[in-house]
Image (cartoon, rainbow, N blue to C red; front, side):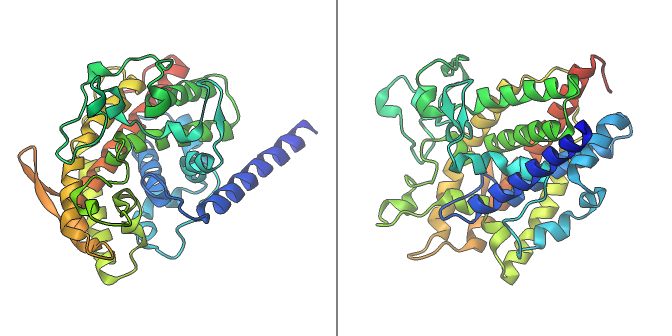
Length: 358
């Protein structure tokens, strides 16, 4: 009888998750941090890297495959990325849990541990930590970027109530994943914390999640517009929504860039312990450096009415002595978050099992 009720409970949980995703995803003015599809791509690739690694434990691989629903998803990145017909429906398990924090944002789900609600957990408006009040705003040249020492590791600092809790929320999710692995909780709970961890790590690699000007309204291209354009949304979902031939070509280039970045980064396994709080802090600071570039891309691509997606994604400039396009940057930031998610899942497993996996 207990097994029967557990089965029914799990089925209901999955049905409710899907229903919430559908309701919120179709609501107006709703966007995902890397788009829902982007979060799923990142999570699936992190899982693939673990499953493809012969040194990873079979028990962990089995859990992750169950979370995906089918191993076939690990071989379908091209078809999944190019499918523009269904952008708002997500499978139960790891796919839906990786985008669930965004659905909870719309409902302002409470997070009692910090006395806040979900919307504050996806970003950090870093300029709020400028000591000079006049500098608590975004400048298109990036001049108001703060230093790591400006951020207190204290969630009770009142500035976080305005700036956002992504560093602390990610740390909390990591600890919850370790507990779920360690205490042998239901697999649905493991999937939930992997999905949440993946979501917040990925969010921190999105440049517009590191600034108070999260829509790019302070960029020159928006200054004279009566109705401001949302560059944030362009960076997130435009690639996966463009049904034109050019959109298809850009998705093909994105996949090539994404896979190349994964191949370059995946072998750089460091032995030191990752601090999830610092992972997010570092990601936010490196994200901020791309904001001036995105403003200049908007200057080139944004016309009187609409943004030219092809000009936007293929705008290039030199960053750290190498030329990079917006499309390459998007692919590389998603790849970097993927590697960190992989490493944190493995580390959480190791911590829970009290043994090292090499």
